[in-house]
Image (cartoon, rainbow, N blue to C red; front, side, top):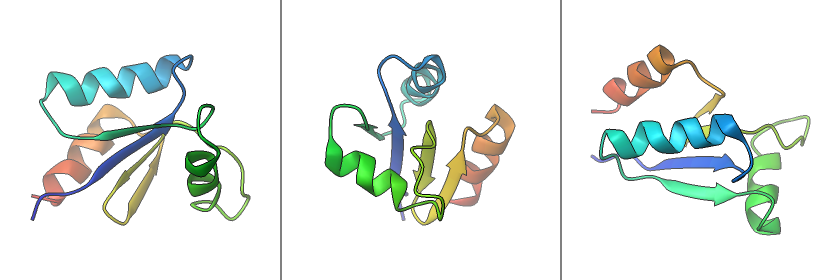
Length: 82
């Protein structure tokens, strides 16, 4: 089953841009959810954390939440989902 990848972040965040490039370079489908442009996306992100903070960039792969993961951690989770 193909995983759903979501990237919560902002256009101005260099780490968010890094992850966008990471996914695009690997031709992976993902949804970029700009938490500054959408209150709905910001609320979704807040609800992932008990602190309710806007911790971005955050990546979700199905039910797994990764906060600013290293490239190796991200590759590991992408491989587990295959």
